[in-house]
Amino acid sequence: MLQSYSMIFDGHLLKRGFWLYVWDIKGPTSRHVYVGRTGDTSSPHASSPFNRIGQHLDTRPKARGNALGRQLRRAGIMCEQCTFEMVAVGPIFPEQATMEEHVPVRDHLAALERAVADELRQRGYVVLGTHPRLGSLDGAVLGQILALLDPKFPVITGFNESHSNGRNLSGTR
Image (cartoon, rainbow, N blue to C red; front, side):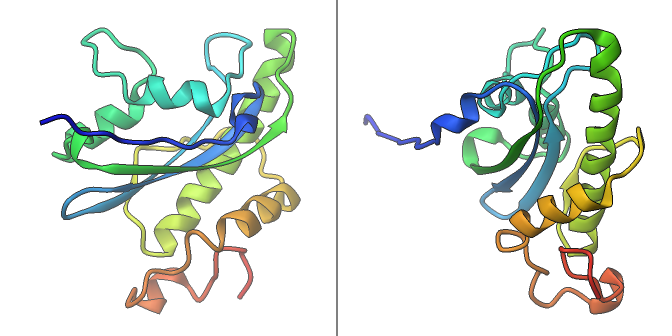
């Protein structure tokens, strides 16, 4: 029997640049989050979050850029059985013209990505993937990002407060 599904998205998600995003992935018996960013490591391009959606879930054998799909498969989760919600913040920085200009901005965003992933883990979320420590962390920008994410990703009810060191998502005690 045929089924119908719907997708709604904001056109702002089509804008290229350096974005940070968090996927909230709910499976039949699980919930995971995935923190990512736009800004290629091998070229001076920074795509839109909308473009990353298809890349992340590309199931072709030779697909590249499908880190989220690979992480879900490693966790034994079938993408087709999940619901996905992406919260994207940005563009935090514009796309850069050269690789020399691109690298410091990319690394700066990587530090923000790592800090958000660490914070979500402290809140009790199962965060997929690894997030290397690149670049210096801008606390002011991190505070703005976390303030936007805080309503969507509160401390998980029942999560042991000692694991989170008493911090809320905005980084305050």
